[in-house]
Length: 283
Image (cartoon, rainbow, N blue to C red):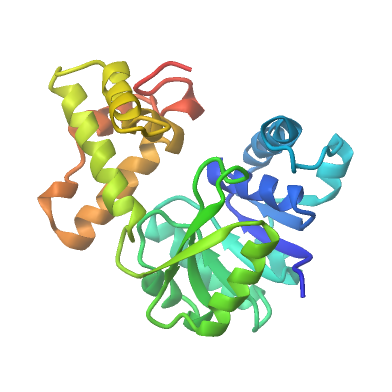
């Protein structure tokens, strides 16, 4: 049975990408965020993504502006997800923010609805503990750009059931994505490794060994990566990278996750990457 309506809580960079992917695959969505300004930014980004999708992928449908907007209900009221068949959460990497949202979702959503935590580093088991349905909480780590990437890192928490994994696989099949299922520790596989790359690249830049362009070029031209670590950090958002490194450091108490001072300074200066127009590169 196909999903008809999915709730998306948090419509920032990744959340907007998830919404665009849902729309492109014929799934209606309820998009929730804290302000009308955030929703308006997301609306513009989704429309642009969907408009360009057929240029980048031949199998992407050509949708009009009205067709896109008819498939998404934008709201600041979390209660609007009460009729959704699956809920994907994408809010900031801050447990003080996530925990109350899951507590509310647990009261709002029907008993059988599963929650997909699109978190960078916070343990899925910890997230599940904020609900009365830890067996129905599963990690979904979408990669950027969401509508272009065919694979998703899926994280099984301590209590995540086989039925919940099967439910998520049905949704991913509709989105034409493959799941790589891993176990649960903070950062999982992709971010425990990728954040070390980004953080050390920031240290290399801070130490004056090379320019940002040179550092990224080495990864692209020598290692065959599509993006360099500093470009990736800019795309994710340097504020998100700092928050994720803090979660990893607090979780493992391992100095290898100590955030580069320059990263924190750039965030404090408002230079958060693509979304602010300036990070390690200028946009």
